[in-house]
Image 1 (cartoon, chains in turn orange, blue):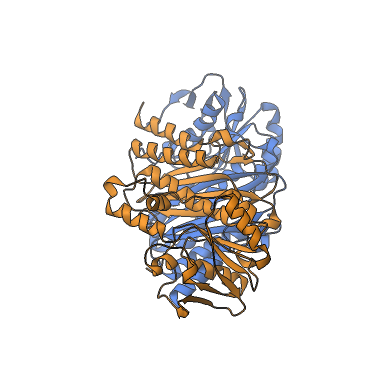
Image 2 (cartoon, chains in turn purple, yellow):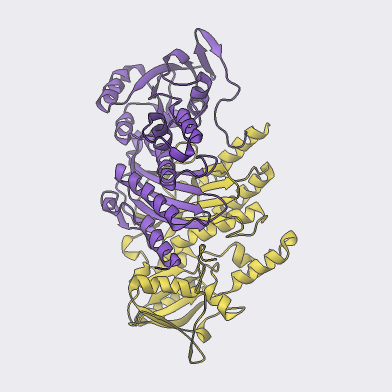
Length: 314
Length: 314
């Protein structure tokens, strides 16, 4: 097989991943044509996110790990809205990589596709100076359950899933030993394949008033909820589950945990579904009328020079 | 306004472009949340395409021209399937550009949005080594009218819209005088803003058996139809409308014309809709049983060393 032929073959392969899930996702015509055709029952939601080499993941990371992480971090937005994942589109820009690179990337897509029963509806493959993976994720939900950033109410309790700071520790471990990444480390796993719990998120969508995934940092992402809801908030550092330095945990993203606000009378329901789906959850503060965010540690207000990740403020 | 604040402002601006078209596109929740929410009436189609600086457009091209062209070339796939354009998602990777760059890019998106009454459902903005614009386009159609690549039938006539080779001439003109691009030149316009005729494509969808847009080159793209339809074809160079060297016209993409096959008894309908929508159209050949493509010039078979554009065969 000529290299160019094999490349075409791989291109087709990466496009038709997860075709066993076409029916459940309403896909009538999958990859290979100018566009993919889908039949929709409910309302649908869409989000796009790019992952760039050297920015979102270390250069020279194994392609299958790049693929898995890029799709996971993009699909996280679907969970944050309370949706169930329906399909993804993959736009891949690569340097003139060899075929083994592509084969490994396809393996990563396949792993994700199987872990989440999610088909690839289509894709695009192009050449560029650095790897750039742009993922469009489509989800399904009932519109009345869309978990908006702007839905927080005064008096809402603020809850957070999981433990922050793990992904940052994982990234550090990866960078310290790129040649032999410890894939069994929970920290490394947290950076490379943040777990997305669409079933929990779907149940959450009928309980919570607002929700966001922690991708830029807790303070920054809670700020997005407060700004959209035109309210303020107060969180207690002691109540937040985290590892590593507190500043890292509160201002570094990449954990892809869910941050939500609920009215106090729904707390019981939230604890019930968290238990049922085995999701670690902490009550970390409450929504207030004053439009500012107060972070309290040992009874005193604390502040951080940087609230979260911004690509253009580096 | 601090640079970072203004940047956030621009980010929001580019995300909410075309909100006047939300209703007609079924958009319930637009940009600004984790995902956009859409209500669907019919079947929908999706396509993604990336445009990379130095590959798809010359480096240092004005950002508003980059934006307009990137969206046009991606949305062309929707027309090629017979769909009407519904919304786009914009994933933009830029180097550390100044705000005037971003403002100009937004202007280009706005121009497209208004020319095609198309809203921007959402977006992502990230930093990288080179500009990379990945556009997801969504279209609407009735599933029975989806114009497949695989729908060609033996005996079908092959038709082509427009005149090939114009975009290549336009690109040459641009590269020769980057400092002062002649935006009134039809060739330049053809490269920078290939005209998409969604209304013509929608009518075409109930007449044609197969269709593709000429993005890689006539021979390559006709090859895609033949391969998908498991048939062959014969085209006559004399019947093809083109400018410049024949090899360029037949093997260079970027014209984004529509190439279609129809059964002979639909020819009259095709000519009628072409006239109605003022679309230049040429009958250039026919579909044959033998699974090869014969290009005939002055009665003799001709062949070209390169059939079309392939990013990884350069």
